[in-house]
Amino acid sequence: MDVLIEPFFQRVFNESGACLLMQVNGGKFTIVAVSNKYLALTSTSRGELIGRDPFDIFPDKEDAPDGAITTRNAILKVCNTGEPVIIPDYLYHIYSPEKTKLEPRWWRSTFEPILGENGHFDFVLGTAIDQTSYHQTNDDLFKAEQMLHLAIQAGDIGTWCIDVDSKAILSSARSKSLYGLGENEYSTLDGILDAIHPDYRAKVATTINEAIASDGSQSYIIDYPVVGIADKQERWVRSTARLFTESGVNRRMLCGTLIDITETKKLEQKKNDFITMVSHEMKTPLTSVMAYLDLLMVKAKKINQDFIYNSASRAKIQTEKIKNMIVSFLDLAGVEDGKLKLSEDLFPARELIEETINDLLPFAEDHKIILSGGLDFNIHGDRAKIGQVIMNLLTNAIKYSPTGTDIELTCVATCSEIKITIRDHGIGIAKHHQEKLFDRFYRVDHSAKAKSGFGIGLYLAAEIIKNHGGQIGVSSVEGAGSEFWFTIPNQLQN
Image: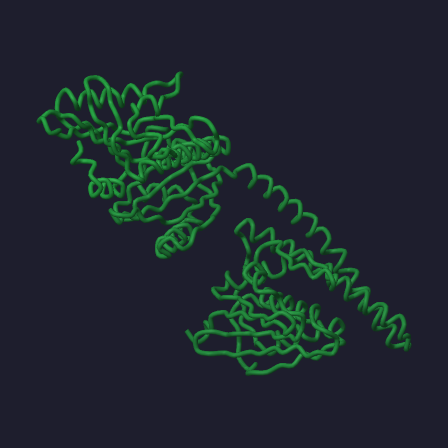
């Protein structure tokens, strides 16, 4: 033993892993060397351990003695068999000086016999690895999984995964039920897509392919109706998903959730039906009011009654606003039902744009609208709806621009597309708002400007352009104005 604990060995041993060297004398054990890492793991000092029986120093909790029993049995087995013993992770309690109490720790230990000078196994070398963090992490993950499972159950959420390469589908019982399948019934990806209503099938397939192509950088949320594969019941579902790649095996999985939104869609349908009914009922009297206002303005002009003419003119502007609002509500209901109707018209661009600007002149009396670019081309599309988009963008430009500033409208027609841009020199829009401007009911808070609106104008404009096969966008700098643009295909050249 004297050779083992000579200064050189002591220095090497002290800097090794978490090791404890014990001398064996019959059934008793005496600690003769301890590494620095072992001292750090057990919050002890070398003076507390050397020459002591390890089980006098590290007693286990009285109500949980398994750790001490396991360790003692392992050491005895090493002495009796001369073979190393590895103890898998086990719970052992270590005294914490900071908290002045025993604390649970998870250990993975190895005990190896070492021959003494007499050729007997007089020493046992114990090596310890602290696995507490690993077990705590696993416990936290287990608790998180349990909480997630409870949340999924409480929210009546279905979960699913699709292997991108094999097209194999793994679905929870709830996901299967939303597609009209029993818990032990299965379907292919083609069967799942076939269950989607034909009007939405291509859109869902495109959305899935885009999520896969994004390689996990994009998720999606999409609503669509399905007809149950087995039960043939129609339901509306909301699906969310993102692509995940399993490391090591390089397997790509599209994973997501499903929830039943059938009742929500029914309520939306009732709301849309009510809005449509009320809006249609209001259109007829408003048309009559506008006709009478036109007559009043003609009469007032003939008899040089400027006050009456100006009052009727302003009343007509407000009536026109109400009419446009009604049209927007009707269009909104159509968009939400997936039934936004577009007519196939062929009309001169100049005629539509100049007509729209003339309609806005009373409202834009403090601004000058400047036209640039070529206007001598025809547009193929829904004349009223495209005019509605231009009207909305011009109205917003006027509404949010200082008095006396110019509004610029530019038209460019190429072989493939027609682009119309409206530029103002107004208050501008912050970057974080620009991505959401075309969302339904989204409004930028311009409290100081106190402007009215329901947040559906730009949403409807985007839907109209999208249904024409075009794009719409905005670029803006706060305090320096905004530039809204939209494009539609130039079908006359294709």
